[in-house]
Length: 115
Image (cartoon, rainbow, N blue to C red; front, side):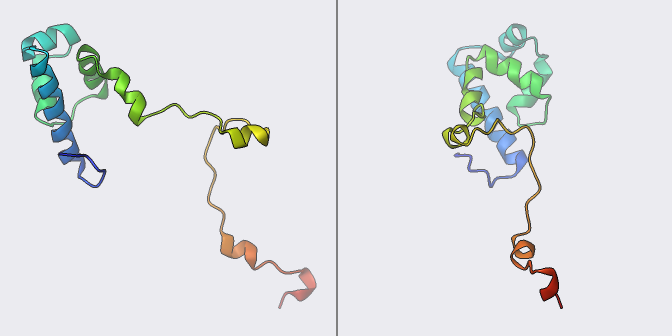
């Protein structure tokens, strides 16, 4: 199944768990071996593979053992300063700002023109 982002969280957890299981089996690790190598409880390994909600730290430990942790870079790339921002000499943004109401700003009039 391809994850498009329109699936429910539960559906995505099930798919991620199945992919982790498939990689584990391809690497010829039993759940017990995975538990020992990752430091994650055997019951938690089972919960991950069945698509149940678990602590993110446990998933990171499992992904590290499966040697796929670096793939997170593909889905969560580091945000860098854009060349256009460098040209404008802007620094990296540290927080988001509220959306400006464009309709309100286009209705501006001089004080004497107000009715």
